[in-house]
Image (cartoon, rainbow, N blue to C red; front, side, top):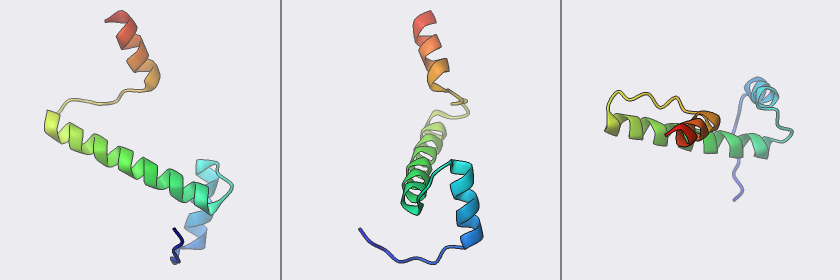
Length: 67
């Protein structure tokens, strides 16, 4: 889908640099996926209470092996 939006070029350039992407499309795709992931995590945390969900893939794998 094509869209035209006005984005601050300095912010865009900095975001591309920190995300280590080469195109605006990559940045926007990555950003939207990260936003969705973060919001899903927040909703899950709200449902579960004050449980910390600071899990990386490696921590989860270790917990599975140890558990």
